[in-house]
Amino acid sequence: MNMRIEDVKRNNISNVTFFQDPKKVERKQESFLGYVKQLERDQLINRIKELIEKIDSLGQSLAKKMDLVTLKEYKKSIKELLSYTVFSSHEYFKESLFGKKGRHKIFGIVKKIDEKMDLLTQEIIKKEADNIKVLSYVGEIKGLLIDLFM
Image (cartoon, rainbow, N blue to C red; front, top):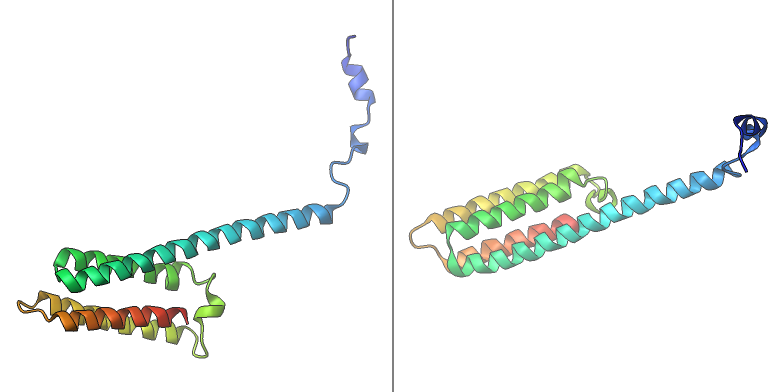
């Protein structure tokens, strides 16, 4: 059974419809985009949770050891967390982060975190660092990070 090119030409391919209802296709596309956005949001939230746990652990370690290596890692983790929550992920957290004063609230908290980080750094650099002060600064920074999400 050989098929000739002429036979194919006789079939009217323009009558074939690939999609019966364009609205159904559009809905599928929207739901796919919604699914992708939800996956991105879930990944972002998981990364933020990991960073918060890491920061908490590093803070406790910092209060015990009071060394510059742990301080550096602690500061790096906080910087990454702030980057995720304030700058790169603002579209995901619009409703929860923006208070009545908008971005001023967020940047006010970030400024306070920076100030506390400076005080913490100064305390650890001292020859006779006070463990209670270090623990206090770590607690204050943790509280400010929590405020960022409230």
